[in-house]
Length: 222
Image (cartoon, rainbow, N blue to C red; front, side, top):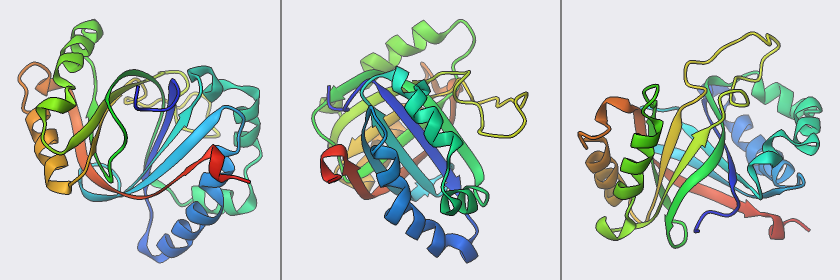
């Protein structure tokens, strides 16, 4: 399976341009490494939108198991954010947070470009949609596509991080299709082919194409 581990944390957000330089500095100098250092985290990848109906910035964090994303070590990290983290997190806009299981992962390796499709499965249609995506996610049938994956949010854990424990999010149980590609145009073509598929077009919420900024693995941390 090309994706490392069994669990994935997805975060995506916008930030006001006036704070953007500081936001990027924090992500690059503290946040990614801090998260990858948590027990059970394997790697993190950070992206910026090339073309997207989703927020501008996107990060993916892979974990050994899904359970790591509800572990004491991760909950401790969430409860003890650094001052720099609190300052930047408070500025997030349009945030998406998915705590997910990796249910499909086909192909080999990772690309410099990521296509992404956000699905909202109709109630009772989850099994049918998963089967349709398993058939459609065939990297060999798309030029320039290295690997294709499906991650499925856990509804309880994907709720926004907020002081209001009763807060809800209509997208907490959404799924994300991830398309690792070698080229922006190839990723865009693959995304369009998939979201135009009549078999699940009605369950597509948004999509985008992102460029890799950088990645860090556990082995990179001394």
